[in-house]
Length: 293
Image (cartoon, rainbow, N blue to C red; front, side, top):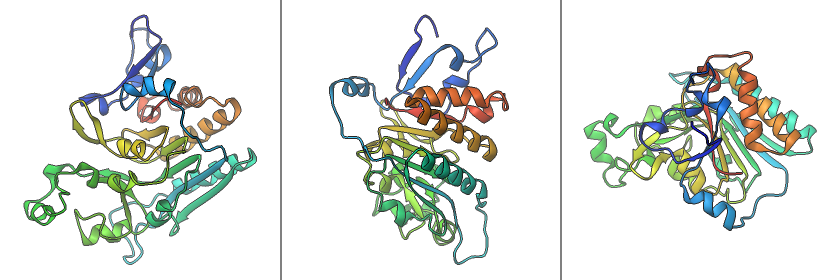
């Protein structure tokens, strides 16, 4: 990456779909070993982070969600349950409580869209579930006609989201109207969450970093939605992740962050530590951090 050790980057195009830190270098290492790449949603964030003050939650409150009951009326379906994410939430809850945090954890039936909409500026919002994105060209023409009144076919914020309790039942009823009832938190809805004092949002899910591309505008998706809602820093995944590796990464990150108080440094250090056990970037290279702490 040349002579510069810290690089601020607003990703666009294909760079929204890869993690530059996981690119091999000529010395047999990876970019993460030689450069500090700080992802920002917009380059103006570099200026505003130094010139503006913003209220940040001083109370050590964390709200955590995992392992939603995707099916309440149907016995089962095509969406795989995520019992490992409940383990992740429980481990993080216990870790933070020993550090003096007040934690609220929601799993199984309580991991609902309605509970998320009740959030009131937790310092940390951590959610571990499936994420999804439906490209516009995957919408059938008959569905597109039905959608035309709401403009959902044109709005990627209505086609990306997080699957929560009852999501499977909702998807059995509709393939496009995700706001019809509780079960899926779309990016459009996430923009209206009360997170303007939230220091960190962690989307510990599959493909939550993906979204529709627009030149000069970065990613229209969950990334943009949570930043608009007020989150200062986001951690999210670029592709499907291994449950066990994710649990270890998250636990290590939170522990290091509590010990040092330095969020980004702890995140990078946790990924490097994970490499001792999982050397392939498919394990540690999925997660990225966006924003300036």
